[in-house]
Image (cartoon, rainbow, N blue to C red; front, side, top):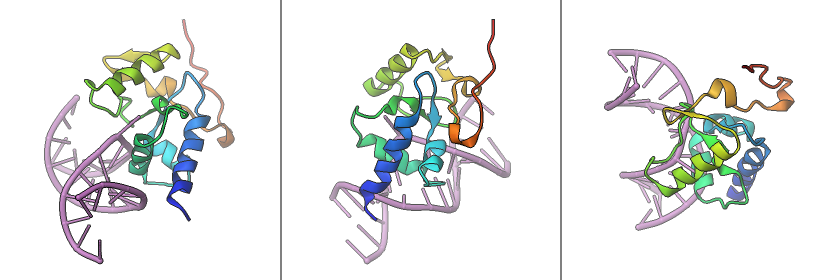
Amino acid sequence: MKPESRRARIFAVVARIPAGCVATYGQVARLAGLPGQARQVGYALHGCRDVVPWHRVINARGRIALPGHSTAAMTQRRRLESEGIIFLQGRIDLDRFKWENPDSGADQNSETSP
DNA sequence: CGTGTGACGCGAG
DNA sequence: CCTCGCGCCACAC
């Protein structure tokens, strides 16, 4: 087993995240077959390139997992907003934008409104 | 090969 | 809302 395999799985999962949705590190780790290794997801993304939509990965609190003053954080926020993600008080409403694995049989959020 | 650290998660206070 | 401690693993030194 190579370390690249793990990263490859993580990248594969992140690449599956549809635009307009976000996933938490823990969720990505679980979907990648690495339950409890959310940390590795962050580590992997740190070394990933823009070939992966890393900006769709945020922490469980619905916040960007980077210092708000960092350029990467701003780029992430700008990209997410560009995809329709709404930030409220610097936070994302996970109940509305959190991505769910389609293979799980769960349907999209039916919450809509106004 | 031991130690520290990190784009994390979660429970408890 | 917050901080603190623990778990978990790859990687740098």
